[in-house]
Structures are given as C-alpha cells and as structure tokens.
Image (cartoon, rainbow, N blue to C red; front, side, top):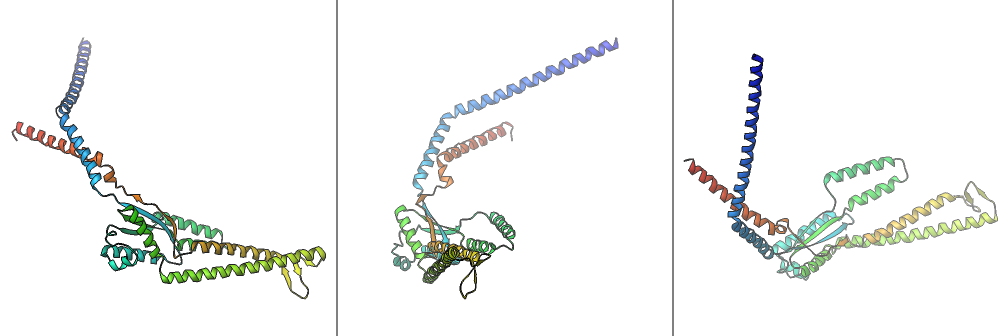
Length: 333
C-alpha cells in the first residue's frame, strides 16, 4: 500500500514539474514575442525619422566626397646603379625640403612654378617586402652558395648576388592635385635626379670601359676562331695532334678544349657587358614610369554608407538614454 502511494506521489510530482516547465517555456516565448513587437513598434513610430537621417547621412557623405580635394600620384620604379642608392634617398629628401621651403630660385631653374607645386610631395621606399621575407631570402642565398662550394660557378653566383643586393629596386612616389602638371613636374624632377655631375662622369667612364672590354673580347674571340679554323684544316691534312692538343711548328702545344672554354667565357662576358650598358645608362635607371592615378582613402570611399550609420547610431543612443532616464524616474531614483 505504501509503495502504491509513493508511486502516485512521484507521478504527480513529475506531472507538476512538466507543467511548470511548459509554462516557463510559454512565458519565455511570450517575452520574446513582446520584445520583438516592442521593437517593431519602436521602428514603426520612428520610421520617418530613421529614413530622414539615412538620406541626410548619404547626402552628407556625397557632399563631403565632392568637397574634399582629390589627390593624384605617380609611382616610378627605379634601380640605383653604381652604389647610388644613398644618393637617391638624399636627393629625394632635398627635393621635399625645397618643396616645403618654397625655394623659388631652385624651382625656377628647373622651369617649375613654385606656386603650383605647393601641394606636391615626393617620397622613396624600397619595392621589396618585409624584413622577415628578406631574411628568409638571404638564408636561401647562403644555402645556394654552400651547395656550389669548390665549384667554378661560385664566382659568377657571388657576383650576381652582390649586384642584385646593391641595386635593389626602389619606388619613388609623387603626390599632387593637378594631373597634367603633376606628371610633367614629376618627369622634370626625375631628370634633375639623374643630372648629378659626379654620377654622369662615372656612367661615362663605366660605359667607355665596357665598350673597350667588348672590343677586346671580340678581338680575342676572332683570334681563337682563327686558331680553331687552322687546327681543323691541319687535322684534315696532317696527323700531328696529341691528346686534343695542337702542335704548331716551333711553338708550344695548344689545348683546344681550353680554347673553347675561353671563347665561351669571353662571349658570356661580352653579353654581360652589353646588358650592363643597357641597364646603366644613368645613375638611376627608370624601370617603369607609372601613369597618374587617383588616391582614394578608405574613409572617403565609405562616406556615403558611413554617415547614415553614424546619424542613426546617434539617434539610437539618444533614444536609449531617454529610456534609461524614464525608467529611473519610474523607480524613483
């Protein structure tokens, strides 16, 4: 009998607990519904104000975009030659200082109106990536050099890497407002950068040396061709060769394979010098002179969408403060 009463009580308690649970769930849904309804009524009451604020914000953003002056820029990728990277940074700093000082005499000598260059700016920076990336690249270079240890190619690799490190590409950026004048003045300033007398003489001497080296290489190659031609003819007529060496009358033996190696080395050196002449026509070689392009700052790009959100956000903040103040008054605080 006691067991039956206990079982009935347990069933009754379970039914009460489930009923209370369903009631709590129902009340929760009612509160959520009332909250959504209150939110809907709030937006309905203030719909006109919100629409007006959104339109006003969009007009403000559009107007600001029209008022704010649009800046332009030209980017010039250059490669400093003959250890002129430090000179490049110094001359760019000099030009920027003259722009800020409005040096009339200096700019007049270049044919530039100092009044029209007042909004002009110039800066220079490496084209390469972050320092971490450069460090990883340098480690790869070292590993590459180690793999060529005791090899005849090591000198060529070291020379190529040193040249690559000493002629790291740089980006010169010109900022201005007038697209036509800005591009013209940027080209004038690039001519001024390459007008340094010292580097002009260095480039001239380097060009003369390279041309002289090419002529001598060509002359030696022609002589080697003559020797090889004579050797071929002699092989057809006589049999006086020993282990790849040609024996001329009353002369020392000549190593034919070494002649071919020397000829190939001279040809590679001539090709390198011709490439050097093309690259080093000026102290600062212009790789690419970019076209004028408009600078769009992220803030100005988003003005049309930003200001409506700002205005509506301020309205919500004011409404929330009013609501808190009302509740405080009701509680008698």
